[in-house]
Image (cartoon, rainbow, N blue to C red; front, side, top):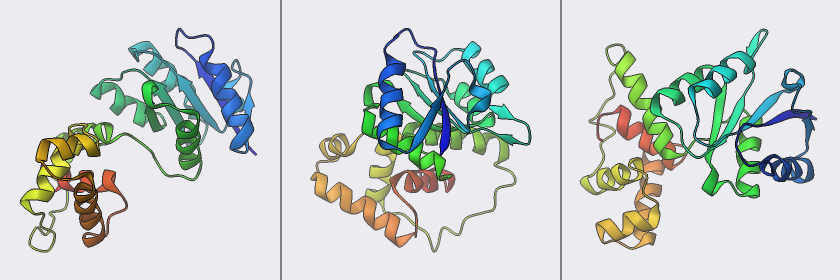
Length: 209
C-alpha cells in the first residue's frame, strides 16, 4: 500500500483532516504521520499562497536518496518561477484549492501514483514557456506541413492556454460547447495526442500559440 505524507502548511487547520479522510477511505493509500514525511512514498502538500520558503522545504524534503519523491501540491497561488523549481524537486501534480474537491484530489493522487503528471492547463503552458526559453535552440524541429492546425483550432487552444474553460471558450468564439469539445477531440485524434492538455502543449511547442 502506497504511503502518503499529507503536510498542511496552510492557515486552515481542518484542511488536512478532510484530505486524510479522502485518501484513507477511497484510494487504497496509507497516510503517515505529518511529522515524518521521510517514511512516505509520496507527499501531498497543502498551502495557501506558495512562498519561497515552502519551495525550499520541498527542495529539502521532496528529494529521497536515489530518487525524487513525487509531490502533489494543493494551493491558492503559485508563480511561474516557483512551478519550475517545484517540478525540479518532485512536483508531479497540482490543484488550485477552489477546485480541490475530494474526488479531484483523489484522481490527481491516483494519476501521480501511476506515474502520470496531472497539472492545470495554465501551469503546463507556464512550464513549456520555461522549457522553450532554455532549450529552444536544441529542440527538434516539428514538421508543420504534416501537423498543421486550422485557424479555429488555434483560437480554441489559445483560449484554453489562457485558462478558459469550455463554456468560456464557447462564449468568446460564439460556438456551442459541443462544437468546442469536438474541435478539441479532433485535434487530439488527428495528431495522436493524449488529451486537451497535451494538445495545448503541442500547439505551444510548435509555435502555433
